[in-house]
Length: 251
Image 1 (cartoon, rainbow, N blue to C red):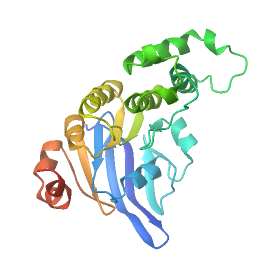
Image 2 (image 1 turned 180 degrees about the horizontal axis):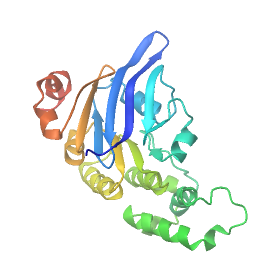
Image 3 (image 1 turned 45 degrees about the horizontal axis):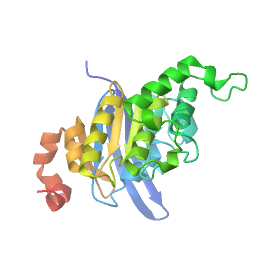
């Protein structure tokens, strides 16, 4: 019996005015897999992420999360159902400390939410989980500094930590290594691999070294359509993929 899909897209379309961006995407992401979406600039990758996470409603088609229809639901409802995402542009609270940034996400995941009768610094379960995540993202020594003064790579690591800390079991990462040096990218890949264990990961990434190192399966999006979904080795050898994308950028 094959694993059930954590995320399903069925004939998803998205147009802005008369311009079609997503043209009938059908995709199953298996629970527990690391799935990469690649393609040239303008292929519609970020638009697809925005549809899945609720920022854009599809023009037509269906999106299901763990079997539940989430088509057109607002982002906060989709997040409550177990999906979290990061963005291409770092999205943190720059004036809060590193510790406070992670703790905000942990509080929600442990269902304290907007409780007014708990002293947050006395919640042992919150502190334990926050400290564990800070250690995982290698920011324990920086936990008291404002997040806005971290280096770019540290901010990206913090955002990944915040995304994971929310407790979601389906994680979308939008170009998590963009702008990083080679050594920073290597660290980020190991960080993502460790933090995403046991979760379903969908990643948009331009760095093919990251993609082929991290993904269990890869989908290739070209002009709003998926032209192939397969294992990294088979995607690398796929002539249509080479002609449409890999062969023009990666030899």
